[in-house]
Image (cartoon, rainbow, N blue to C red; front, side, top):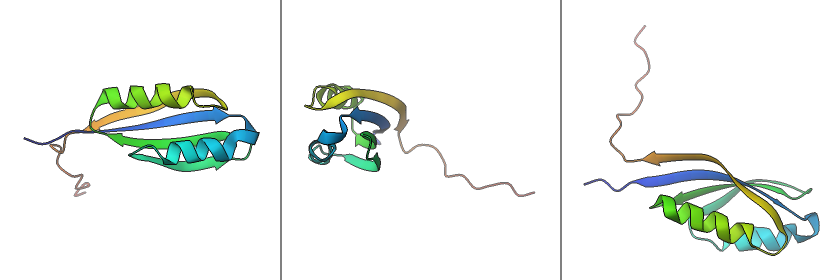
Length: 91
C-alpha cells in the first residue's frame, strides 16, 4: 500500500516589521519551506504532509501567529505514487 503525500501552497501576508519572526515560526513547522518572501510581508509557503487535516491545522496555526494578517490556501494536490511518470509524446 502506497502512502499519500499532500502537497499544498499557502500565501501568508504579515506585517512587514514582523516578517523575520513569521519566517522563523514557519521554518519551525515540519514539512514547510518558504519559496518566496517579499519585504512588504508576503510569503509563499510550500507544505508536504501525510494528511489533509495537517494542512488545515498548519494554516490555522499560521493564521493565528503574531503579526500574520492572513494565511490562504492557494493549491492542494495528493500524490499517491500510483500515476505513471510522464513520458512525453512520440510524435
